[in-house]
Amino acid sequence: MTPDHKSRLLDLFVAWTQATITEAEDRELQAALRTDVEARRLWFLHQDLELGLQCLTQVVKETADHQGEGVSVSKGAANADLEPGSRLSTSSANWSRVARLARRHPAMTAVALLCLSATVLFGVHMWRLPPSDFMVESPTHGTNFALSGQKGKVIALHFLLKTECPFCLKLTNDYARLGASEPDVVHLFLKPDSADEIKVWAGKISQEGLKSPPVIYRDPDARLAKEYGIPGGYEFHGSITHYPALVLLDGSGQEVFRYVGKNNSDRMKPDDFITRLAMVTDHK
Image 1 (spheres, rainbow, N blue to C red):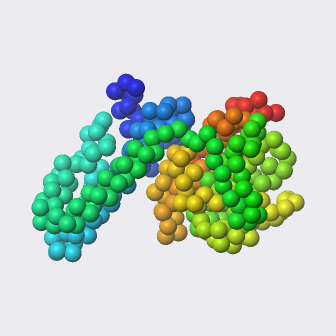
Image 2: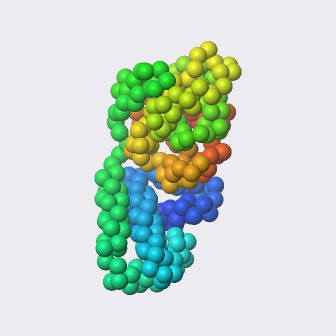
Image 3: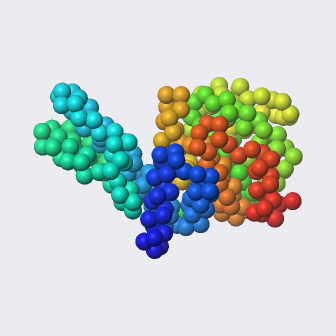
C-alpha cells in the first residue's frame, strides 16, 4: 500500500466517523474494505483507537471535573487540530492536558491508559480475514446454522440492531418474503441481544406474506459482526451497537458485496438487493 493510498483511506475513515462522508466516498470505502486486506487492518485499528481515545479522554475529563479543574477533552476537540494524513492521533494540545493530569492523578490516568491499550490489542487480535466457517443458534426455533453446511448456496447476512428496532422488524419481514421466492438465497437474520429478548422481539414481526415465522439467530456480543468488520459505536435507544449491515456471501463463503447503513433507517431495499445480486453473481 502506497503512502498516498493509506492517507486517502485515513481521510475516508475520518469522514465516515464524523458522518461527513459522501455517497461516492462511501462506495469507495466499502470497495476498499471488501477487496484489500491491509485496508481492513487499518480500519480495525482506526476503530479501536477511536474507542480507546474516547475512553481515555472521558476518564480524564471526569477526573478533572471531579477535582474542579474544568478540563474538557471531547472527541470533537480531539479531532479539531489534526493535520491531513495524521488522523490516528489526537491534537498536541489535548495530549498536553492529558499529560498534565497524568502527573496530578496517576492512578486514574493509568486506568484510562489500560483501557486504551486493551482496545488497541483487541484491534490487533481482529486483524484477520472474515471467518471461513461459523455457527449460530436460533432462540426462536432452537436450531443451529453452520456456514460449512451451506456449500454452494448464496448467503445474505443481515446484521440487525440491538434492542427494539421497527426498521429491523420491517426489513426482516420483507427479506423473509423475498427468501420464499428465492430458495437458493439463504437470508440469515442476526441480532446481538439475549435469547429472551430475541424471542420477544421476533414475536412482533409481521406475518404478512409469510407461511411461517422467520428464523432469527443470536450473535452474542456481536462477535460475528466484528469478525466481518461491521463498524460499531452506533448509539441507539440508549445502547451502543454496530451499524445495520447486509453482507452477501457466494457459494464458497466469500464476500461478494456489503451494504453498511449510516443509521437505523438506512438499509438496502429488497429491490436494490435483487438488482445488485444479479450484477455480481450468476444468480438468475
